[in-house]
Image 1: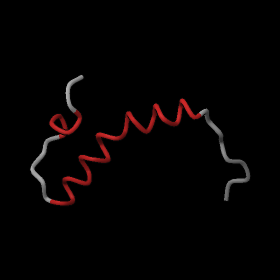
Image 2: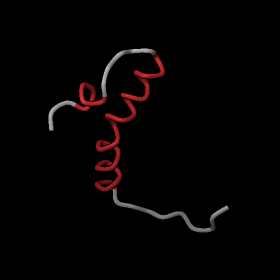
Image 3: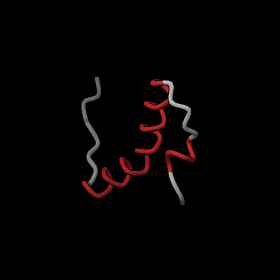
Length: 45
């Protein structure tokens, strides 16, 4: 069990979450059997 937990700014946490959100959505769609590709889920850019 770690004795210290790293802390990050809210801005950094939100940045990381929004960068990983398409991957979370794609993983869920694959588990549900939807035929989406990762580029379709992540959108342009």
